[in-house]
Amino acid sequence: MKLNLVTNGVQKNITGHGAGYVAVNGERHQRAIVVTPEALCTEWAAGGFDELVESDFEYLLELKPEVVLLGTGERQRFVHPRLHRALTAAGIGIECMTTPAACRTFNVLAAEDRRVVAALLMR
Image 1: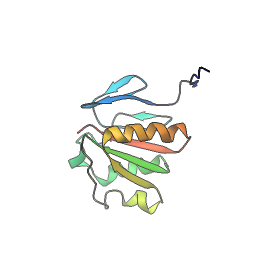
Image 2: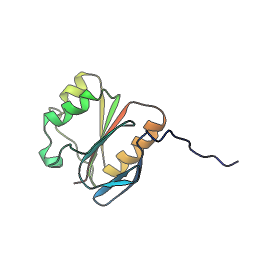
Image 3: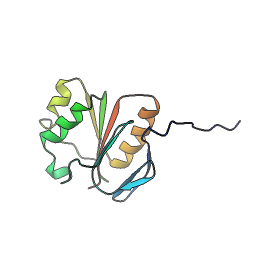
Image 4: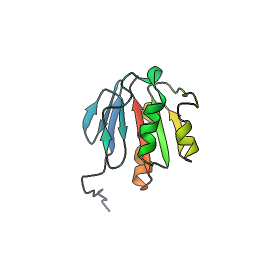
């Protein structure tokens, strides 16, 4: 039996990733992005991992996710807890992982209709 995924064209899926880029619904992005199943934000954390501030995470809180997947580039790094304190206080999980791992995890959780946000850094 041949199975085909049928979508309404609205859901955002991560369709590719590589050194310094992530593709969402076929469109390549080389700067930090935030992806939800419904939306894409290309204006987030422009400075990269070392310049993350609390307001970057407050923006994620406004999206009301169950979990935030923070893709930290090619290597897994962990942010200081003070940066994501608002998320933690609201009962929202945050998982730090490499950006490729965050991309794969996002697609699985989004397919399960979970309220997931992927905040993806390229560097």
